[in-house]
Image 1 (cartoon, rainbow, N blue to C red):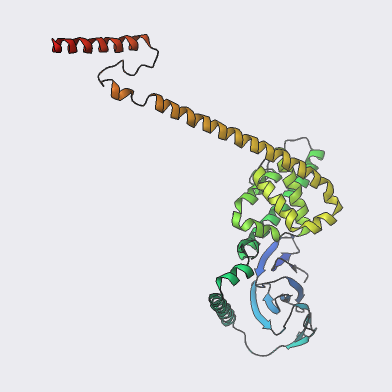
Image 2 (image 1 turned 180 degrees about the vertical axis):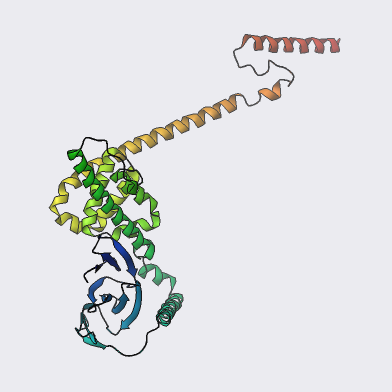
Length: 355
């Protein structure tokens, strides 16, 4: 349409963009797999979305709500075509079928459609629980993944990916403005309030820390290749400055493992990757030395306190509590004289008793 744009991809979400300011109006969730096709209905803000989850969904871009869910394909739906009259819809998929969906005169109630979809979801969960209860424990360990967090995606993980992408876009915009201001004016640059008064690399680190560790890997999987390159650039800057070394190392290693083929085929990332390898080794070895030094210091302090406690362990029991000189350390002349005087006094008393 002339005033809005819709986009969708492998992150299973649909974004509605405003063409006037280029901002994101809303992110819609509903599909359980990658989105393959999006088509507007003629002269309206209603649109259709096709996905690899074998479904077609009908949306309203003004109210940001799903109107209908169309089931019928047995495999991935690749394309959707809306007739000029708007009277019917054609869809094609990997099941080698072309389906025709005609508009009916039935009134659609959104609340009823939501209740039906919710009932289907609950029924599917119940069936899954029953099937899981019937399986043996050994079969479950072999077939099911050991770590669900690394496999499944949730709405929270997709929202975390959106936050990272928005942070990267803000950081890139701020970096361009800083470069432009440094060339045109000599005035001191003030921090952008949208970045909470931080520099672009610091803001990226702040966003990464704000995402739960259990959802961080899932959120990183949502990022497209362009945002992946920008994230690696900011991580390189953070490692140069020695900021957030542990988190940066974790993110870099995960991104390289999960996007190995795309990164290797991209020649622009060869030089940054070499520098990242050197920085990671240096920073991690520095952190290891620091942690080892701190642990050695803690052990020395603990050993010193143990030795001190053992050295002074029975002094209060041997000497009377009224003696003010009893707490003096070993080697004190006054303390030694007092101890010898007490011993000689006790010896004289014993001799008198014998006599």
